[in-house]
Picture 1 (cartoon, rainbow, N blue to C red):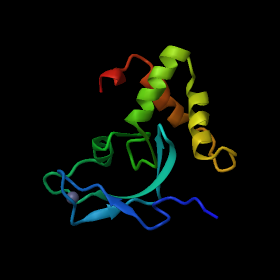
Picture 2 (cartoon, protein in one colour):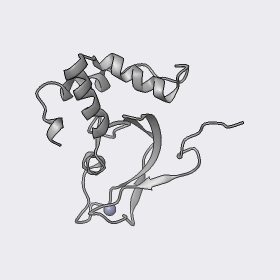
Picture 3 (cartoon, rainbow, N blue to C red):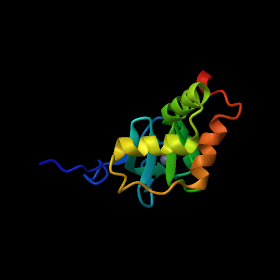
Picture 4 (cartoon, rainbow, N blue to C red):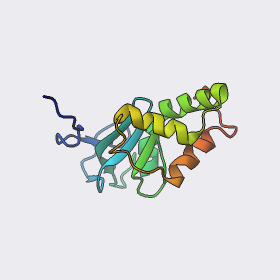
Length: 140
Ligand SMILES: [Zn+2]
């Protein structure tokens, strides 16, 4: 019998580093970062670069370098991958799929029972809605 668990539950902590290298003074993210990807929802543990040395950058910039759009700029707890935003953009344009239904479709990829899916957050829906309002995600 198999039991599903995340890499963060297995102890993996991904270090974001600065300027393409690992940071000797990284700071562990408080709690896990929820990632919304085209493949579903994921939970990862991250260590941010916060040393302030040359080459270091803001946490939001560190996430954007991974092609992850943070839902909030200050101490993000959730990020959406650009792959998920591109998929939503295409589905919205071709099939008029709304952000709420897209979010729940991704949730069903992660857990088809829906028992572990969190409620939709307003900020998250704002990210998806912004991706459809004249952005150029198709050119990213
Ligand atoms: Zn650093």
